[in-house]
Length: 183
Image 1 (spheres, rainbow, N blue to C red):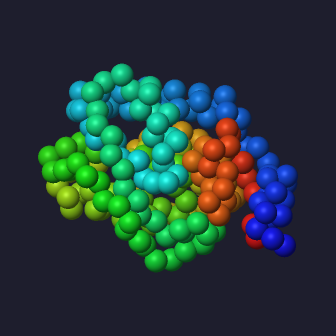
Image 2: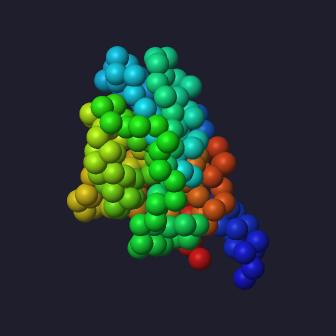
Image 3: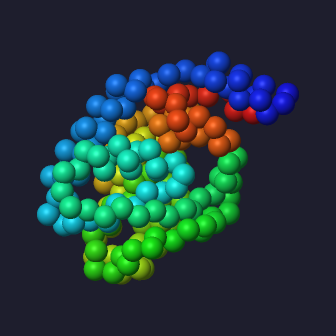
């Protein structure tokens, strides 16, 4: 099967878990929770690239208080459906020392990458480090970290849409979808 055939098949077979309206409602709720806890702290929002771009943008537009936005790129998958080695490709440009940091990512899967990112922010001297994920996957086992803010929950499916991808594709899909088959 060619890559194009694979992508078309994944899209055709996918199950919509959350519509765009449901995701937007979750972002509204997340913004309210984040505002209640962080509005007076002038935080740095850090988008975890690439998946965190869309959730970060969605949240930032709903947060009506002073903040700064930066990004980092670290991960294990690098365009594939599995991965083991953590790779740092981009560090935040803003200094984190003494700041309140909110790391925003698309999905908390096993939690290994997010735990490492949170550790990195603490080691950079952040005064407080929080995390927000659009989706927390329920794996039925303990994870090395728990996000402070969670938009939606999902079962142990390979997900795409609203920042999450299937081999680099479908981050732009307006909803959250589960793959029927992962090739």
